[in-house]
Amino acid sequence: MNRLRLGVNIDHVATIRNARGGRHPDPVRAARLAQEAGADGITAHLREDRRHISDQDIERLSREISLPLNLEMAPTAEMQEIAFRHLPHAACIVPERREERTTEGGIDAAGQFDRLVSVVGSLVKANIRVSLFIEPDMRQLEAARTLGAPVVELHTGAYCEAAAHGDSGARDRQLGFIRDSAAYGTSLGLEVHAGHGLGYDTVGPVAAIPEIRELNIGHFLIGEAIFSGLDAAIRRMRALMDGAREKNDGRDAA
Image (tube, rainbow, N blue to C red; front, side, top):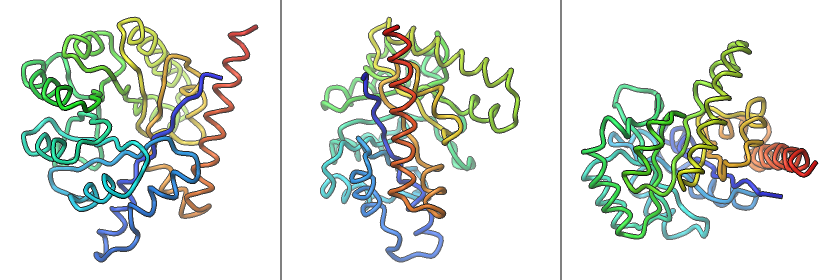
């Protein structure tokens, strides 16, 4: 089976901790539990306003977990310095607005080419695997390749929103964009990941796309953990991903 990797985003463990202050719940403990439950990597977004993950969290994650750490970051000088200090396995460059509740879309790799080219180049030079969080769009994929980013993460938010509203036409259209972009990105030599908003009801069709190598999922898993526990939530997601990939592999073999 062409195994699909799962990166677990632990940001919102920190959100809950910060709502009251103190040390509980601990994002690093969540990262360890995620590893035991079948995660292949840990994702953490260090925002400029530090609304959830903190600098100390990044320091501890870098030091205390054995899974690859994917640092989500805005393309700023401050975040570059933090990446150089901790040298995470990967850095995913995302757009960031202080007033947004969550990342609202992909970064405009084509429109912000001049701003991004030095950021991508410096991170690659530091042997950090760079990914760009982009919309499933051919122009953005071409810009990512030209920038020298080896990885892209396709924004799945529009697909998940359409599914949540029961709009099957829009859902299928957005899934088609993701599918076509994954194939085109792979043809350009990019490693393709996907994420944002995925849950039990939406992960299967994305996981079945053979060109996608990794999914990054966070908010849904942390929310579901309230009801079933983090271990059970991750194991169920892992099983759904594996089942979708195995089913698709069977169709390809036929």
